[in-house]
Image 1 (cartoon, rainbow, N blue to C red):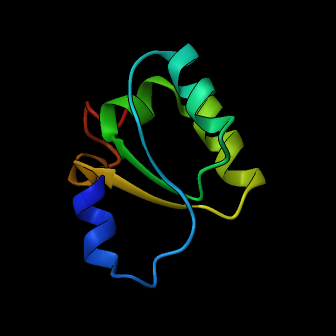
Image 2: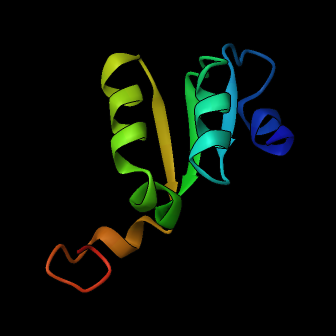
Length: 79
């Protein structure tokens, strides 16, 4: 995450979090109120209700690693 913040430059404000682990860990991270999230597609898929609730209630930028997996909404992975 530090290298990503470095890429934003010195003007970066806010907090950034990498969502990983199980639901309890993700809840703990989200309690810190980050406004920039990095998440893998599989973590999002496995915790979609929790993460979508947080994103819908907060002003958040969310970067999804492996987002190409959602490109084909009819594919096996998207289901």
